[in-house]
Length: 189
Image (cartoon, rainbow, N blue to C red; front, side, top):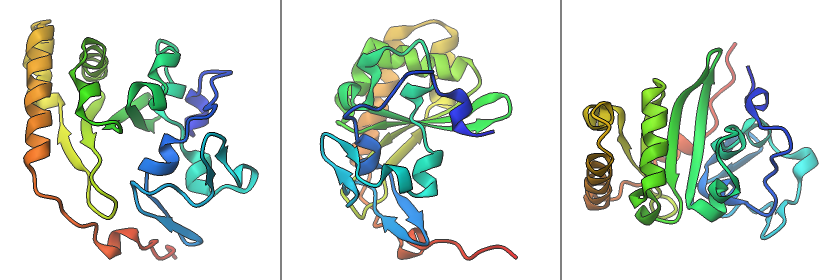
């Protein structure tokens, strides 16, 4: 099932181009590191090759476009959080919450509430802090560490654990992205 099946009707990217900067593209015809603006992105306008964009871009939809309960303030360029989703036939199966404007976005009640909602729904949830271009992003799985606080309905504890996780992410040494990860896979026979 494609992500288009989950897109809220009428919800458009507008001038947001966060995904054009913060996601990697690994295609036979084009490769781009995360953290670098795609050469085809026109700042404030979006994709300059939209009608002919790469399949990875065609197939991608951010989480904000997929959830009716997220208003326009959740658009990634406004919220500082890019939500990438992996879908199964039953709906969202995994969510990566990419803190595109840094850890401040993760220290809010509404972020904690969103995380709790994902985890309560059985969605595997990760908090991701982008690193400098050419470096691996910092990633921490949240389900296990937040489960007890969410079950206890303790928002203050959820926020405390998220703050501790943010601090732990920032203490990790940067790891360069392996050139092998940025090479398209050979076609399967």
